Amino acid sequence: MSMIRVLLADDQRLVRAAFAMLVESAPDMEVVGQAGTGREAVELAGSARADLVVMDIRMPDTDGIEATRLIAADDDLAGVKVLVLTTYDTDDHVVEALRAGASGFLVKDTRPAELLTAIRTVAAGDSLLSPGPTARLIARVLGARSGIPQMMTAGGPECLSVRERQVLALVARGLTNTEIAESLGLSPLTAKTHVSRIMGKLQARDRAQLVIIAYESGLVTPRDDRMSAADAADG
Image 1 (cartoon, rainbow, N blue to C red):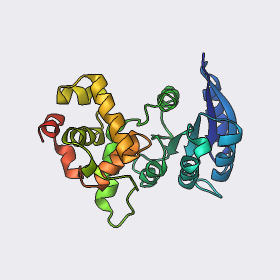
Image 2 (spheres, rainbow, N blue to C red):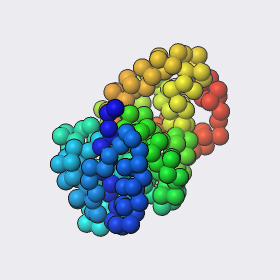
Image 3 (tube, rainbow, N blue to C red):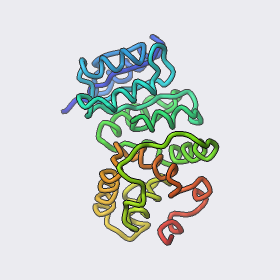
Image 4 (cartoon, rainbow, N blue to C red):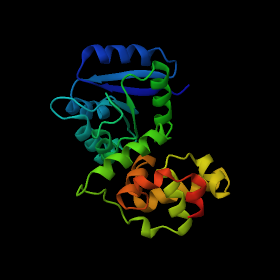
């Protein structure tokens, strides 16, 4: 069995200890390090050869957002995933963390079993957790703020084909590959291929960044969330 090497980053010792006990209880995971600051998390991500960092947003020294950005920008840490923890799922900082390179987020009062599932999901490369809530959060934050810097990509949605723009819009609304396939009359494999190509064209690390790009570019707006998947496919 391949073990998932987990690094825990939180400024509260008791929280780290509780998470460590939970992670070590899983037969397919091991805790390879604990960090009390963002700077320590960045250093340990490499030296401890972590597969995934469970990262608290609010930490001293270097916060979780900047730590995530540093990990995402380091070619030597290209395979390291970041799962952000936040106190509230309405925290505006979550969007900044996802923009910085985090692969998903969970609230701290998540049930223990859900945290373990989330770690497995992110480690496997299925980057966006709870896509519906994540999409709604991003829509709310980006809809309420103006003048924020956009993610730098090789090109916006205009570089995509019509079908790829349809797929991206559905990704932004929180649909899985299977749901996208059903909405557009495609096979799941074809939908997955479209998503992979879109990520390549937009130089996005994962689905979380695709959601942000779709909203920031105006391809999808908060108002569009009231549309059904079928409406999106027709449009």
